[in-house]
Length: 155
Picture 1 (cartoon, rainbow, N blue to C red):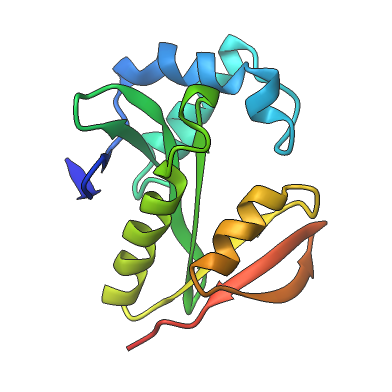
Picture 2 (cartoon, rainbow, N blue to C red; picture 1 turned 135 degrees about the horizontal axis):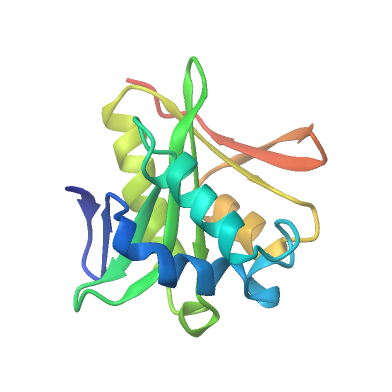
């Protein structure tokens, strides 16, 4: 099932068949630099089960219009009034506008639900903070060592 799609990216439900691509992504040191230590195969499979195949899902597969796996989108309840959104992409797709497009798509979904949108990132993750600010998110402070950016978009 497709969650949403834009001009260049489609966000869809994760599938068990995404396990190899997800493991390659989550075991990459560059990708995991600001997140946590790289995952081993068992950790990646557990993450797929608990976050991607959960009901409701916490993450969604991101692919280009040719069906190539780009990474994943984060989209789930943050609190009663907000949805957390984010992205984790393969390095080959960094700096190509995919995170911007995903942010716009996910923000639109939150807005349709009458919820605010939240992006969390560690302070050193300046690229994510830049994307948040470019999309109108405002810095709200720090929670659990992450900077919190919020876009008020309820109906």
